[in-house]
Image (cartoon, rainbow over all chains, first blue to last red; front, side):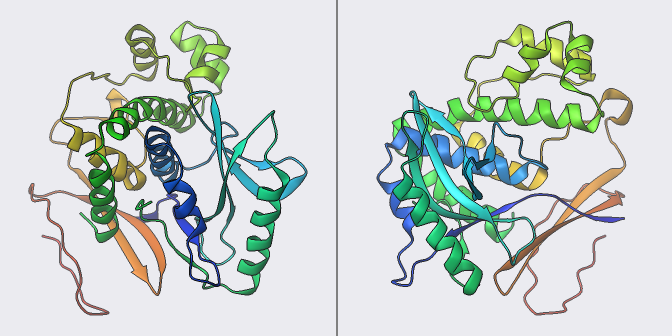
Length: 132
Length: 168
């Protein structure tokens, strides 16, 4: 019997300049917080479904999905979207930190612009390999 | 170990050279593994949080907290009650860091299901073979459930398209 696993694969958005903005954001995160984010992404790849404690659509910007990671009372929020081209693929568009219960609108705007480009250009992603 | 898993373990392991990173990673691994396993075991059994809570003799709100991957407060006594309710074992042990790195990376493939005793068995005749295939950047993972006739566990990477792989 062959059955497909429901595991997910994360991808990084690649800018037109060939920069990897999520990887760059990760390099600016404290090392212990980066460990929490790495481990969380690895576990999410093995989960069948993501409950709201793992990820949810951002209220008011429903096309953007926030991953909810708390470390040392800081709310880290990788932002992304389900891949329109790859089943069980999730594209990391940007990283943000929630303050006062909200993600800065500039970060959400950036994520939405990248989402729009990804919908036009399918090849602006690379597999997320936990390098950053 | 597939190329993807190998690359992940290698990259995570490189970061483990930083003590802050590795200690935080281990702390996160406890929380996320507990949350993912409890939620997966509950869903596998078709239970609601309330049903698992009743079986474990605790409140539903406690199950909700345990299924929160950000919850870093777990105790062995509580986990033992969850294990008994799901009829699975709980194993707590000190391990080298490399094992945590591998477990975390491999769980992205193997998932978090744990069979109950009635579906378990030493020398179980069933083996799981994972096909991790990447074609033009698109990755798919399939699970082949097969009957084991021996114990070899081997990694094999196909070198040419269409190559047939025989599993003995």
